[in-house]
Length: 387
Image (cartoon, rainbow, N blue to C red; front, side):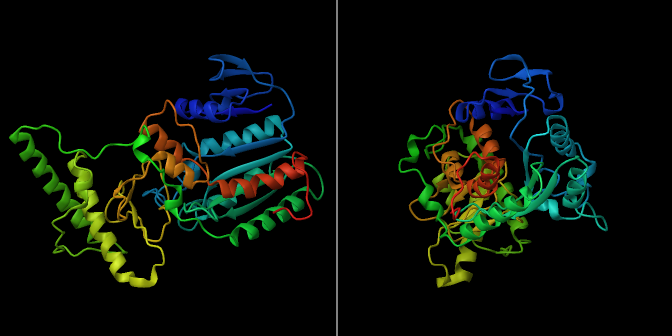
């Protein structure tokens, strides 16, 4: 029996469309053996199965741990509301006592809670070790082979007795080493052959009909947004632009004329940043494909040049500046770059799709983490060499 739990209705809808577990309960804090909780699958309260689960997988909130969070160093992640999601994971393991446990979070969890304090990771490990009968380990796993740079910290727990965790750790290390030796895939290999057939595709049509006044207002709004973006881009660590940088007459925003004045300014400034980085790098790039997260402020937004993706957040909008592309990457392409091709986005808005992508994990790290656990539980047949 597969049972899931998800607070976000859109994510629960997508989970049911793609995985079809028997139950998708709403609130993890409500889950108790023989209790009841609302179930998205049945649209009503359902009895929570009082069974011995083989495996519990949970990803607790990364918002306060993420390096992408501007207030990461100012606020102790263990004292925010987001910390409750870890406590709910801890509570579930304590109440249901699954045979094995897999928890996940971002690598920012290794940072100190605040200056002079221990890391969040050490607090998590200390708390997990209070659950009687379990042994615990953690690994940082890379999204090897795939173009999305998405390393994660995974926590492994087992109550299957002496030697269980050692076997899991050994197999994780074997798979981790194997994946690190595989060739990396270029992002363009995940592009749709016919992107205009995607329900998320936005046609690059001309400006919508506007009065002369509206055109003046749009030009003014663009000029203000461009000035602000230019000022921020001058403070970038990588690829800073001079405040006197002359932008080309053929602007990147011409490929998306119907977007907002703010987005037009973002595209034009990031195009200039990208070109500067390409000029500085020169012929060292073997297979260039410049991409940028144009949703981010121009002073800190990531730019990638060699076919890799910037770290994806729930708000990320990835624009390709490559010749013959010049468009935003579609949700289907971004999810495929996670290693999850043919994902069913039916019924989701663009915002909901991007939220799912920003909260998703790389298939590489999932495989490296899950295969040793499934072997330990007897759900996979052991081979002489795992890979």
